[in-house]
Length: 119
Image 1 (cartoon, rainbow, N blue to C red):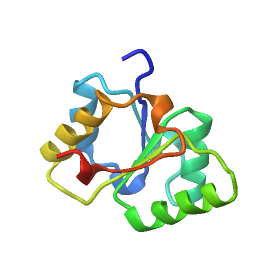
Image 2 (image 1 turned 30 degrees about the vertical axis):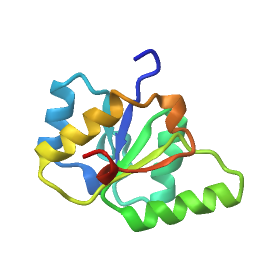
Image 3 (image 1 turned 180 degrees about the vertical axis):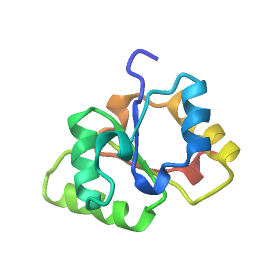
Image 4 (image 1 turned 120 degrees about the vertical axis):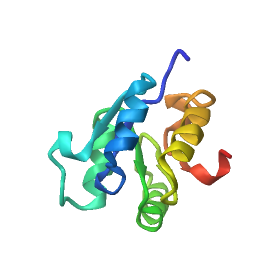
């Protein structure tokens, strides 16, 4: 894909098995730990992801759905958000790969995507 999605995993999604599985499949992944954002508010993670042109991935569905709505209401921009229930790593990876191979980074801008839609 010409405009691949690069991921930012917030601290809720930083599972070492997930990070290794995505990296092994050539997915560009950065974590909250690498960004130095452990313990920071959710909005700081979203701002960082935008500054780095990365789509945020989190298990924190409620808070990021609220932030997404707030951003839209206030005409603010984000690079995209993917939220998921905590599932088995293999299932998350399969669904993420399906999404990443279908959508572009441009298509994800200002978009909230539920990984449950990618079965």
